[in-house]
Image 1 (spheres, helix red, strand yellow):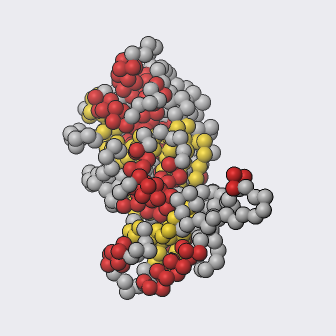
Image 2 (cartoon, helix red, strand yellow):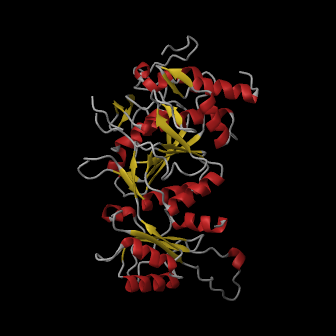
Image 3 (tube, one colour):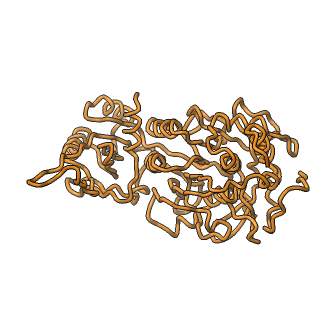
Length: 439
């Protein structure tokens, strides 16, 4: 088998708007401004391009005899206003920049662009110059991020629920965390989990009915979305349907998923999936306006000002953000360095760094595109197990905060096969005791 794998609140909001994705907004197509389309992702270069934000104020609505501002409905076609057009044209001329793509945000009156510097330019020096330019609200590199998967290919209680899914007993993480026993008290009913990742095979028999909505921040390729491996693997671990006589069972089989595709594979599929500042920012900003409590980020990379502010905004809203630890064990970049993010590593015999959660991440059987199943490894999978357990806990205590959940996961961890790692049954039981809820 192959081994497949969030300055001031107003400024934070402005940054959030900078990257927001609104399906009904359309750009102003004149003055050579690029359409805010995801079609440009493949032409972006994280080693070359930069992200810039400029003010884009709304013009006041015109009035006439008998008109009423109370009944005025502004146009949904908010694009680049004349001020943004003029500023961007001037910036491009002054610094020799070429626009790759841009996206306007109506509520925050901001226009963001991905720009290509001239070939001879020093990108760091250019960003510093732009940051000092009073016309610019934000300037930073377009950065690259990776998913954390390996692309090479205990006894359960007698009281545990016995599933009719044929591969349930082969699910190492499901078995070792005693998820079936935890399901006697919670299956994550109705808890909303957002997966920011690659696409997901929403037609997979073990994911039917579990994915509530999707968003593609990369392109408009529906076929590619459904054939993406990494997101499909993560989704299956979290919420694969139970007792459908097919495949596997998710850690939280009654949770509800939202999928935000921000990562993609190279055309030759020779390496793991990658994302960038542009796609991730659009996905995170879109999440600000949703009701999701749990956000799974089985990916990471360098610290990023825009992404960090968006993440801070999400965390301030009470979201529970679960992130995978990078393969090198350094969680100082995005998203792991943000205070309040729960960082998860693949469990192993060595002691985990302080505050890091350990979960099964090696040889994990999960869903694959086109209705398949296979084993995969990586901290991406470990993070997915924790997102599933978080859904079980939130189903019992919907107001549970990230700090309490983190501490509960650590304190209820148990040794399985010689390693200390999260345990779904122990966590659920401990929470029920804390809440003094009778079965």
